[in-house]
Image 1 (cartoon, one colour):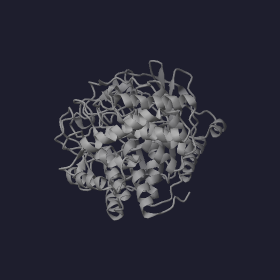
Image 2: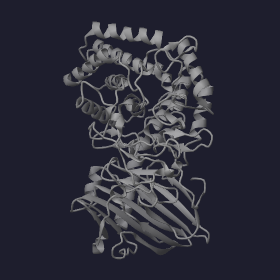
Image 3: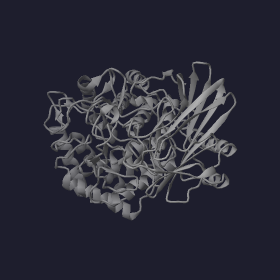
Image 4: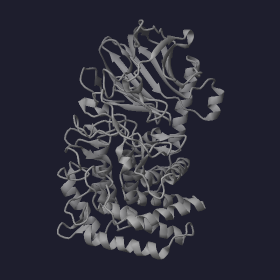
Length: 617
């Protein structure tokens, strides 16, 4: 259970949220049970509720006691079903259970009408008497559309906007809003032992499948719990910190678009990297830079089907833009996601602009070639097979690397200033050619060995002479530069250098000296001109990279100390944003962040391996 959360008028913190989802979309629910973010039908669709970004214009769906209360929340066992328990001042206890129902296709067919997109919210009075207050304020398209409200008798209340409809149904009393208004609000009193269900259903054009409530809703919740518990029990990781690893796996599953296998970076847009700042980005897309780490995590946890689906999405998406690779794609594999501000929203904690889309899709990031080829290499090592077309495509990426590796790029952090020769990018170019040569040796592709080998050695020579600063005693962020970058902690992972090589050990030490803050790591120094005003937190993934590097270098005690320090910064339901403020512990950036949870899993694996513990399953 959580620490007590007092009901106050204070602004939300990013860590106040939890997530529910069904593998197609996700909702964020605040610590007081208010649903404040939901996009349907897909992660990147325009919002239906966006109080997360503007409490007045965004819309929300609250279910809570009408008086003062304190509350606790937790996920049910190892699932993504959320429960919030309210304790009123006069002894009443109310439990709110939130889920986006999921089930096997067979169970869906047996269970009656199963909407494509829906949320089930159940309230139960556990003790005393509680007056329940609710407010349903649907604000489609980031608050830019006004729904038409229509009563559908026993089916509930329909909210129509364009070709879309949302239907609110409950076995508790529902009152139509006054004429000309769209907000459903009211109160009802529950006594110990009483419960009620509220279902919200979305459909694009009619007809919509309307779920049954009561006993049918109970069966739906049971199926959903069983589905998530089956997922968790199938997790093949049985080393230290299993609870945290499984929670991260559950978070990643929520960020997976099941129809394609794509995994988005986060389900939100424009949560700020510094409160009141402008570093507010739309992360509801799939970044190639996460691909290799994603496959490592999925395979290590025994999620072979998910790993295969993700790899096939990766190959499908990159085929559409070959021979050049895009930085990011949407869940369907489309590469064009133009960035634009949503001017009328205030932004989280008045952090503007609110952005939709992401201009990074137009950047040139050399490292993505190495990541994609590394993902293919991992897929093959796990028993996967490459068809001829995929093999030719991968070799084509290698040829692109040969042509482009000497060009400056925007780098892994998507710097919005001038392009530079980033050392990490060059090493990933080296990795692309190295893995293609290995795949050639194993008979999986037919590569121009002489050309790839010559260019691979040329890249190494350039990195060792221009990407390593003798005076500083470290690899550096850019060729002939003097600044550090946390991505350099990853050079050992791709086999470019041994983790315990003197240059790698020295680099790790310099990075902690220059970028470390209370056991956490910044991406790069605040003095670096990245095209934006300065100000951001320590990066979660970088901090976990540091743990993995330390573990690989045999510094297990220090790695463990830092890892447990990072675990203490999760919110009370085990989730992380993109960044952490080392001083206050505040979460910053989009939430929950796949990259951070991938880093946690990777660090736990590194510690297990360093301690010599077996996988156990």
